[in-house]
Amino acid sequence: MTEPATTPPTGCPAHRGAVPLYGPRFQTDPGQVYRELRAAHGPVAPVELAGGVPAWLVIGYRELQLVTGQPKLFGRDSSRWNAWPSIPEDWPLRPMMAPVPSLLYTEGGEHQRRSSAVGDALAGIDPYELKTQSERVADRLIDEFAGRGEADLVAEYAHRMPLLVLCWMLGLDPGQVPVLIRALLDMLDGGAGAQAGAQRLLAVMAELVEAKRARPGADLTSRLLVHPAGLTDDEVIRDLRVVLIAGHQPTAYWIANALRLMLTDDRFAASLSGGRRSVGQALTEALWEDTPTQIFAGRWAVRDTQLGGQRIAAGDLVLLGLAGANADPSVRQQDGSAAEGNRAHLSFSHGEHRCPFPAQEAAEVIAGTAIEVLLDRLPDLGLAVAEHALVWRPSPWVRALVSLPVGFTPATNTGGGAFG
Ligand code: HEM
Image 1: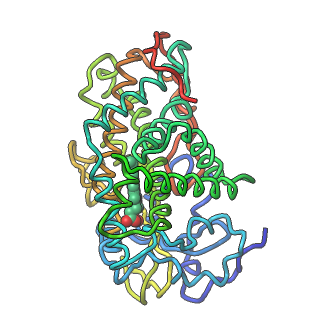
Image 2: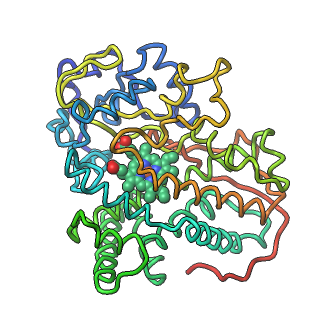
Image 3: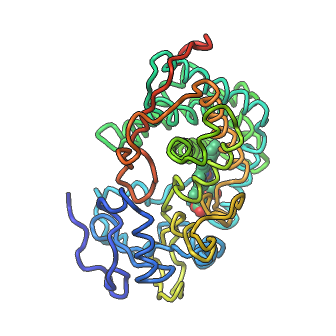
């Protein structure tokens, strides 16, 4: 692999003791890294991405609100990045940052047009039907391992649940579901099959759009196609892809992180033996303490400016330190915890590009149902390994468990049939 330029542009954060955002430290205790960054640099810290690429990490709560709430100062279009000339073609993070013509990277009126269509299409989901579908998917997934007395709740449950519910939301033909899931997983693996997976995913989306143009249904795709914003087929395909990817991973990690909390923390033990009261609390607490998207890339400075005591140059990359901002002492109680019932975390981000509200509600239904059904079906569920043996993925972007092995008394299945 070609190394990026070793001498970053003058005035960039790499000149001032930037902290690497890669390596094993983030994997084990990101909270400690954020504490050290805050102590050394305050709410905005100079950091370094893989290959020595400089960026700013915003870990102050107010500063994060400012960055996400001021699109005229901090834009979403990554083509203004001042580091592009020194970024090699094969830089591993290029696919994450390269501008693509989707809802994610548009700005101003164009973003408003795309996001109102996606928001309205998501808002059209019937919450009762979403709950029923989520229960159905949860039951069928549990059927696949209930008789075994053991399972890995990450691979066999948390990852599959949101994906299958999202396929239903999109109105995908059941026969296409395994094809789409394979394509998406190949793409996300980032290995040799990633490009082909990305192409297949777009092809499945294109077929879906064609099918729904011919025979509209009560699904998100059909609602997007007839929205007054007048999206072209290409725009619909790209934005459906955003919904699928943005919906799948964080919801999967949210389920796993909340389950881990419930299985390891005595305060939640009572709910494991039958009660349901604490599922909502576990979900909220997981967003404060182990939010699935711990760092989001990002925003790009529109012009030279100041932020949290740092001088930011036009075109600098500003990373949203969602977990760091949630841990900002200014929004915590004296003992460091978040007040019970407080949902003012920034885990869904903030401002016009934040996770759309109907998506947040849908994610909560999917995640809450996943945990409730699991606890109903397998009430004596327990961790099959010691808590300290649980391993987190080595990524600065997500806070995600590699696996969550559990044991339980084998149970009978509901007879709903397995997934293909
Ligand atoms: C059904 C599940 C979900 C769907 C369909 C969904 C959908 C979306 C979409 C369409 C966007 C792009 C918004 C835009 O750029 O205008 C987005 C952004 C985002 N979502 Fe979600 N999402 C889901 C679940 C979640 C969960 C569980 C989390 C984390 C707890 C999350 C966190 C975020 C974040 C951090 C952003 C980036 C916001 C930014 O650029 O500031 N999402 N989501």
